[in-house]
Length: 200
Ligand SMILES: [Fe+2]
Ligand SMILES: [Fe+2]
Image (cartoon, rainbow, N blue to C red; front, side):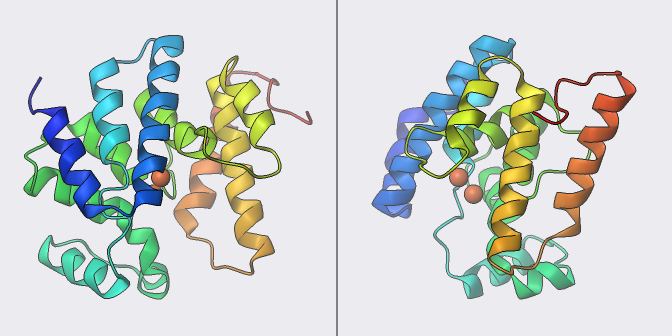
């Protein structure tokens, strides 16, 4: 183990609101189950789940400031919706403040909000776990939970669809990476001639 996860839990409890901390523990639990189910490295998954919302409770001004400090280029959409940045800033904080060097873990943290084309197994597990953790309660979550037990790609697609649906209904700006991530997933499934995702 490259750092003490108990110490991280204590640090998170201090940095996160009780709501975010409870959510984090839910994501860890859901992600551990998915790691077992789909044969991912349990340590990478646990660390990524623990740290995925490290920057979630920072004020937007602080997110923008930290993005500047860590050399993260902020695009036009992120400048308008700085909350999106909590994923990339969180990954940079995990690296620079906590010494996490595992690129698989850092990428999963970075991609957990918008997704990205070419999601790895660990990326997908964290994205889906974030969506279905036990504390989540919204229409469609049970369908995504059922899918997650059977087919991770289908669960990922349902999570992306649900996220986009939520943004559209709220008249929120959609980051292009979210659309690119979903297109890439659909193209990958089509290339596999895999129709598991279609229409149901
Ligand atoms: Fe998040
Ligand atoms: Fe989260």
